[in-house]
Each structure stands twice: as C-alpha cells, then as structure tokens.
Image: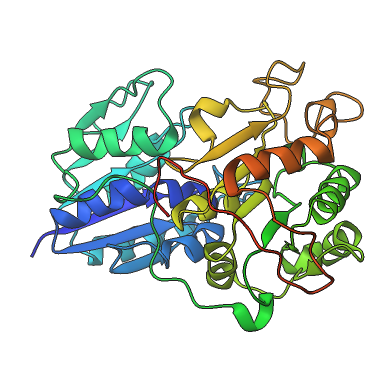
Length: 356
C-alpha cells in the first residue's frame, strides 16, 4: 500500500491552494495524509483526495507560534513514524523554508522527501525543486507534485475544489445574493470597516441583496458593516457552512484571505480588495472570474506587513463603493430591478470563460 504525506502547515487559505497538488498525489497513492496546523485543518477536511489529517501547530509558522517543546516534537515524530509513509511533499510559500519540517520527517524515517528550497538542504531532501518565478501558489504546489512524479487524473482541470458544500438557504434566504466578507486574519489585507460598509451600501442601493459573513470573533465587525443594508451572518457558519453560503452567491467581495480561495473552490466569482503587501500574481483568486481592486503600487507593496505601515490604509480604503458595485456587475450582471428589503431582485446572466 502506497502512503504519501502532504505537509502544508499554514492557514486555511494556504491549504485550499494545495488542493490541486493533493489531488495529483491522490491519483498516484493508495492513501494521502495531510499534516497541517489547526487553522488549516478546517480546509483540509474539505479537500477531495484527503484520507486522513494530522494536526500539529509548528513553532515556525503562524501569527502566534507556540514555543519549541521537545516533548511535542518527539510525539509528532513518533506519530509520523507509525504512519509508514513511503514519501512526503512539503508545501511552503515562496518566502518559507521547508527544512525544519524536512528534518522532522527524516527523523521519522520517511525516505523520500520533496520540497521547493532556496536553501542548501544537505541530506534533508531527496528532491530539491526550484520554484519558477512568479508562479501562483496553487501552480507552484502542483509543479512540485509533478516533479515528484504525480499528475492530475484525466479530466481534472487543476482548479481549486472542495467536497460538496451543504445547502444553506435556510440561513441565507433565496438567491440571488452577493456576499461581503469584511475581515481577514491579517489586518493589512482587509479593508477598513467604513470601506466595507460603503461597499455594502452601494451594492444594496444598486439592487443587490447582500449577505455579510465573518467568524465568531468578527461579530461586531459584521454588524457594523451590514447595518440595515444587509443580512448579517457573522459567527453563524463554520468553514463548511461558509462554503455553502459562497457556493450559492452571485459573487464574493473580500480581501486577500481564506474565503477568497474558498469562493474560488466553489466556482463563485470574486471581487478581491487586494492589499499589495504580498504579490497578487501569487495569491489572487485562482482559476475563477475575478476583479482585483486596490492600489497595487502603494508604498506598502511587498512589505509582507501584517498591519498597514501607511497611515489610513490607502491601498484599500481608497476603493469606493461605486467601484465595488461596478466590479460585481462585471462578474455577476446587474439586477433588473431594485431589491426590496428581504426580497429577490431579478438578475441577468453573464457569460464567463470559467463555467459555474
């Protein structure tokens, strides 16, 4: 029995972007196990091709990484050794090193380890792959899988994908609607509350029915953004439920954060207010109709800052509600008539290159 370990230790969005690589690995393995962090586990549970998940919070990733504990590392190494893995792929972002993870995998006795690495790996990697410049994160992960001998099954187009999402109409009300997700785990990658509220108001005035989403810790934010213009679902869905909400939406308005990739995975068009602290070419919504808004040449570009270093967050807070409404119309069409409170405006269809 062929067992392959795929490692992606970052956030839910990062794990979603690993989805095409995971499906390629699954086509060439009898069992695929994903090693991920606590935030990524909710996404790993939704990925086709994943048979089992191991959750471990690494001290070298995340926003509040735990302290290094020898006993925790010892337990993980023992658990991985018991897994009997034939090979492992360590997926990382372009700025990360796979070598701390590779060391633990080697200690666990995994014989064949592949990763992208700019650093000299010594004996830690069997395949030291070089990432092509400018590759989207999803493409880079799939490139590594291919270099390791895995290919997507015939008929798989390589887009993001999740398992079938639950139907959420009892919560959202009827179609059509547009989702606005104002929050992000990294503050610099989300618009300010006033900017998001202006977008909601502009969409409502343009005739769209608007649903505002957010996690349990974002209830105050979603209430402020929704006000009396939108349905506030802040804190009312888990990650799978959010996939269901997004799958029935005409479009999503969101920053550069996990729900943007979740929308792409359910083939929902995305208006992305993208802060250039990281490059859009690597992190924009993947293989789905989308519009990127925000000043990509702002002073914060390429800084990887978690909090905007420029007063007023101008790269995103300069985006107007009218611009958001126009971008939604370009992706989802314009309502034929203004929306009644709680009502359902008609909406004309538009043709996109990517089928829904």
